[in-house]
Figure 1 (cartoon, rainbow, N blue to C red):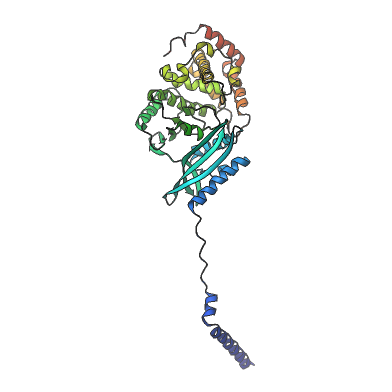
Figure 2 (figure 1 turned 45 degrees about the vertical axis):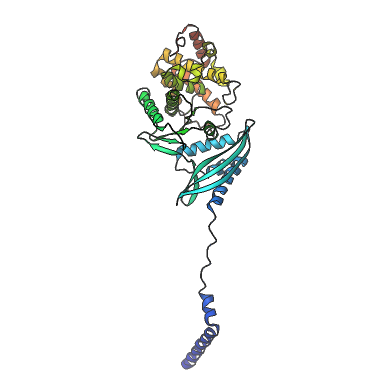
Length: 399
């Protein structure tokens, strides 16, 4: 029986060998065929275009999370700025948006510059422009890192600027001066490695910052974002007040957690920023009319700064906020005034991008802070301020 099993096994082996010999190399080829080559890599331009179209789809469908999925989380300032930009681009005043990749230029294995062509209509005006976006690989995926600036690294901040900027050294000197001037004013300090961005193209500043605004501006700052500045005004001395104004915003909004009314925030930034210098160097102060400062807080709260009727209306609003802060500091002192910020800062951070009742909430928080710290209502403050305006000489002799 054992011998019979051996014979059967030999026959099976012989049969398999015969089959192998009959198939020859064909059998080997079938058994050891190489792995198919991967399909060609998708061109970089197509990859970036797909990202830009994802941005466009997110805006069209108002998908906040989809839009921010295209933006790096490694740059907190830019991530927050893009959250705001998304909220701007879904505003009804902006329509017919298109985003097109014109070209892609590799910088190295993990970064590239994409030239973007954007068109849209904003507040009834047609816009058509291009700009360079920096993309970098985050965990193997291309992410938007923002406008491709050049930069200077300083100990306390980073200055970023558009290619072609000719006054970098002058701006560095003015920024350093603003930091020095505010060292003894506020106990709170600016963020470590705060970012400041210069745009010599004023329209580019608006379109990459707050595109729904109907007017061009010189500076713009928001909580947890970089400071953005237009750098093209011929008289560079005027920038000193603007830089200090925006640095005051950055510091004081951190104290109050972004919980105070706009007129108080702006008035504070003018009082400790622009008004530190000659009034003639700031457009709003240079065009100040004392009678135009006689407005109630209710009137200030009702103002639509994004769509004013005239430029003078904007200047009057800013100057009136400055007037109220001047009255408060002159009457109650700096330390007591700053308690308004500390009191408001007891509340959690108020995000203007995600909170639909942001403005009204801050108006109410301002009322609460005035009552808690100073024991007065906004209505009483308005009455006291207007009475002060009839007798004060604070604004009679411009600096």
